[in-house]
Image: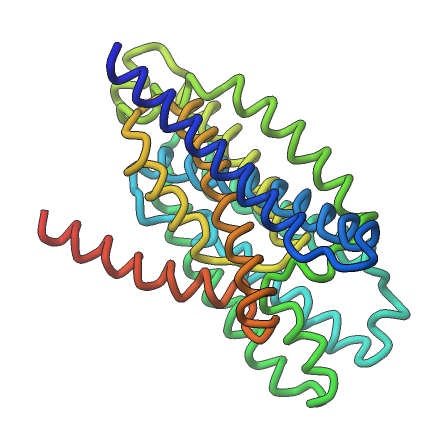
Length: 319
């Protein structure tokens, strides 16, 4: 009973911190044109909530499937493929990119490419009746490296002036949110999370291990495939909306495990969403008000996440 009370208290504290961060970000120094400022900041807050929901669910579910807390879905090569798609588009159309492809078209091409890649990978490797999850991870790492190398090679071939278009896609940003893309992304995230939360009890069983899950009557291969599809959808939408943000999932999931100390995934994912949103809101506030937009938000998160990743590796080695 005491443990349940502590978890509830932690959830309430996380909720209050998220709301306080949101209020600070929304209402700090509005200035004269407060209506315009509120509208602009409101779009950023909605985008942050979308990204937080996508990152939290996909990262927690992925770490449960792989039984590894230092892995995130980015290991599958989604972000490398996204940058390759953006590089190919600029390579093909040069400075006419924005005339040929609108932001909506670019978003759809990116999402379709990443989801199509994941489906192809699942069909070819994660075959029916076989547990090829580790092979899937290995191939994902190799293809991610290949995509990254191809992107770097093509970036050397394009005009230096056109490279700035690609460079703008390399870092996640909430400063150029397109409302036409935001609301469909919110709808996809909400629908996926509704389905995902109804299946969190399966994650509780999967956390026990493959053999135990099968012994308890779980259709292991089918359930794993369903979660892999949801992870692919959420990661694709998040990456296409704001850009790659590699270490966010690693950072917020491990903070969530430390803060809440529970194995129930509906609580873990709920807490992780609030931790992700709070981290992004505070990071965006610092980037705008302290660093005056001189440092990208993704750079701050990747630096902190990189050091935290090294700390986790060293801690695991000691254990």
